[in-house]
Length: 257
Image (tube, rainbow, N blue to C red):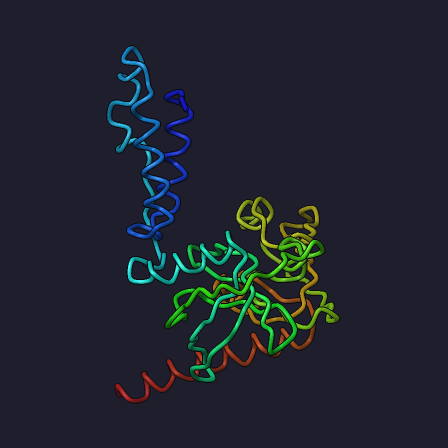
């Protein structure tokens, strides 16, 4: 194998974008490949690699850390590659429980890792947050990877990684001021997003989702510059949360007097 300095820097850029996976088998494998390829660069081109560590950087702002999850990630990767079922001991908001799963896809979302897996006991695909896996064991129980499964279709109406009922189609319309056009319109949030032209200093985004959980938190993160036009359920969720926030600050002011 040989590489050009440009190809090597592309690989290095990919590695720092995976900085949250530092000290795991994923990033270690990538850096091993980087070291092997670095040795193939002709001496006449080595000068191009000078200071490459300073020329690419990621802040890692808000990213999760996975070095303590290395063994679990290793088991997940082996299950994915060999198509062996996994036994998971998993912690959710409802408590701890054991699952026997068929691992389908390792998903990166906002610097966090999730596993899409078929759960035998549920008869459907569920999404597991990797850092909530308390123990993972690789079985020797082989499964056939489904031909009709597609992660793109699976997340077609998900504003992130959380899915609702596949039958649910909730149309959400949000209005923004013109100054947020670049942030909203020039980013990919969901496959079916539609952005209206700017009129009178405002524009709208229309999406179809299967649940409101993540888009609600996204709207709250933007704040008052995101105005929900519909559905009514989401409007009430935002109004309720705003009232809670205002109430907590009013309570602080009252207690400080």
